[in-house]
Image 1 (cartoon, rainbow, N blue to C red):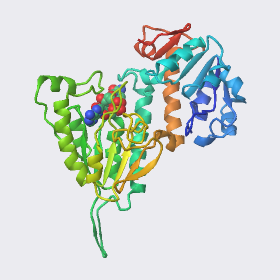
Image 2 (image 1 turned 180 degrees about the vertical axis):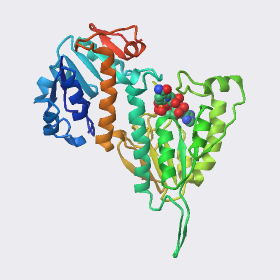
Image 3 (image 1 turned 45 degrees about the vertical axis):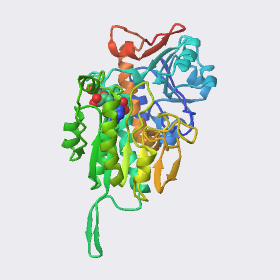
Length: 380
Ligand code: NAD
C-alpha cells in the first residue's frame, strides 16, 4: 500500500499524522510511505529522520495522490482536488461538519474521522480526542502560569509568605482532569465542576475539591448521566444552581481553566461577563472551549466565556482571557507522537497483515469512524 503523509496547511497547525517512529513500523509492515518534504519540521521531525525510518520524501501532489492518506486535519478544497477517487483518508475530519463530509464524499473518498470512535476500552489506543485533550489540559495550565503575574505554589520565604493560587476547573473530562493534575503539581488549590456525578471521585482522587450541585429532579439526574460518557445539555434549573455555585468560586479564583463541551452542540456558557467583572485584576482564564461557544459580543464564537476571542489573548475588566483554539499544536512534537500512534492503531483495523485494505463494518470502531464511501456520506 502507498501511504501518503502530507504537510498540514491549516492555520496554526503544527502537528503531523505520522512520525518517524510510526513510519518505521509501517515500512516494516511492507508499505511504501510517502512523506511530503517538511511535513514534520514544525513538530521537530526532519526529512532526514523520516528518510532514516524508510520513508520517501515527496511533493504535496504525490503525498495526496497515495492510496491511503494520513492527515491531522480535514483536507482543504485544493488538497481534495489532489486526491484520487476511491482513495482512503484517515484523520480528524470533523464528523459534525456536514458540508465538509459532503466535499470528501464528492471526491469519492472512503474517509475515517477518528473523533467519531466510541469511547470504549478497546478504542482507547486510537482515541484521538483523549490523546489531544490530555495535552490541551496540560498546556492550558502552562499558559495560565505564564500569563499569571503571581506564583502557583505557596511559598514561605524570608521576605514573607506567598499564597497558593486558587484554580477553578470547569468541565472535568480528559482535559479537565489533566489540568487539575498539572495545576496540583504546581502547588495550586483547586476546585472543579462538572455535570456528571461520576467525576466527583476522580476530582477528589487528584486532591481537588468537587463543587457539589445536588440534583433535585429525576430529569436532572437522568440528564447528568449523559450518553456514552458524554454530557447532555442539563435542565435550566440545575444550570442556574450550578451558575450560582460557580460564580462564588470564580470571584475568588486566580485562574479559571474551562473545558466544558457537549458533542455536536455549542459549548455551554459557564463564565459570564458579570463573573469576569467579579474577578481580581490580574486573574487569568484559559478557555479550552474557545471558538466553540455561542457568538460573543466581539462577533466571533466565544468559548465557555462569551468574552473569549478565538486565537487571541485579551484583557477584559482586568482579567486576561486566553483563547487559543489549538492547544495541542502548541506542544507539537508530543501531540504528533500520540496522534500518530492513535492513527497507527486504527490502521491495524483496516489493513490486513498482507497490507491490503479491508473494511469490516462489523467492527464497531471502523463503522463509527467511516464518514464517507462510494460518493456518499455514510455517517448517521
Ligand atoms: P468533553 O471534551 O466532551 O467535555 C468536557 C467535559 O465538560 C465533560 O466532562 C462534560 O461532562 C463537561 N461538561 C459539559 N457541560 C458542562 C457544564 N454545563 N458544566 C460543567 N461541565 C460540563 O469530554 P471528554 O474529555 O471527551 O470525555 C467525555 C467522556 O468520555 C468522559 O466520561 C470520559 O471519562 C470518557 N472517556 C472514556 C474513554 C474510554 O473509556 N476509552 C476515554 C476517554 C474519555
